Image (cartoon, rainbow, N blue to C red):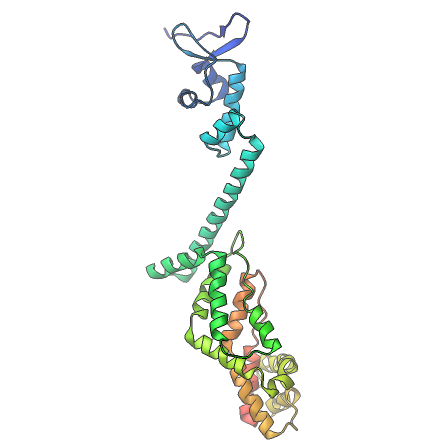
Length: 312
């Protein structure tokens, strides 16, 4: 016949529980109770005549606390400090909450990387590189961009407007968002590839060198506004740049009375500054900063350059 464990009473009437009784009362396994006890988390209140561990109601409450803390992911060493009053539950919870935040952030980044790899159908080498680039710290990312800006514009006397633009080009977020989208991970990978391109750096230097020209100061912002207003519509309406109607649109953007040499200078300047890679740089920076990139202006400027070539 199976032995039945009876509740033990000490002389002052306090109830004591055996390991088996405590297991049934708490829902913990016998193995767990013994393990925690062996590790000094809860010392038995007494021992029975046969040497069995006995626990009072206070010990039972401590087991409940330990179980709660363990379910929250707090380690045994930290729990020991709480039980020994070397640390409060609040302090320990704060430390573990921060650790959990970091773990969640890492998991979300890992998820975004995997989605990027899946979308790109990456090779083994690309997978490794994608992971490395996405794991780069905020400081390292900023160093990449700072080095790019400094080496690209080295030796060029930038005017005030160009200095502002160069500063804008450094505007990376301090870190990827807590929950980065695959689009943002992909943007950082593409940006890292773009700024290491020697061709892109040369192109940007050319733009900086032409930025201080007289034609740039005369036409800059107003020309962009007129181009987006009229050339965009011409693209949408499929107006051919070399058509009679195309000439009419061109005249709304550039005054037909503009001298020929000035129009030629303007054309050369536009061919330099209307660059798809530079526009892509700004789009990637916007994505990394959580903004929606502006619609591409390149179709409108491509149309304008074609119309200028066609109509002189």
